[in-house]
Image (cartoon, rainbow, N blue to C red; front, side):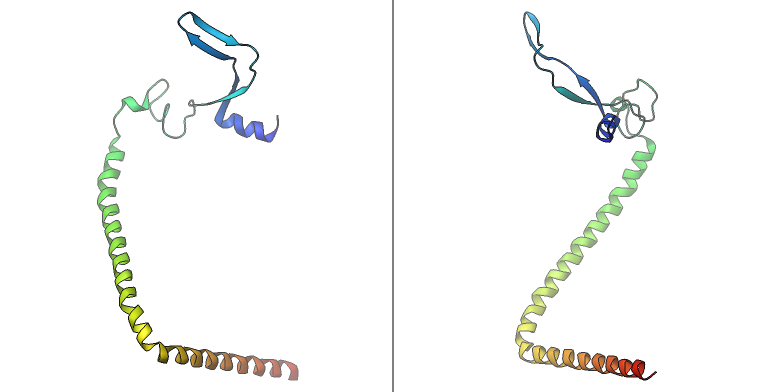
Length: 141
């Protein structure tokens, strides 16, 4: 058994069936079609669906939600709604701040751009002088 077929067999039941057509007179099987068909398995005890917490043969959809699910919904909806509202307010504040700052940047760009270049060159010079000093000290000792 190869790894690929083992991985598939974990999640799907591999069955080989003949293609059949059904009409009023009965079922007609095409014996020439030998394709392999994959059918999902629902007999696991993990996850949602059949066999989840209710014993063998119980249908999960026939029961209502559990008390834990109801409490999670009651607690989760207000918390999720308030967090969504805060995210919306944050987005609105960011957009308003951007709309206000763009004209200011355009208005003061003749001052801001040369100042940013000057500060960048000053920081580069200070860092370069420190590195040259460390290089000189390491070569002396």
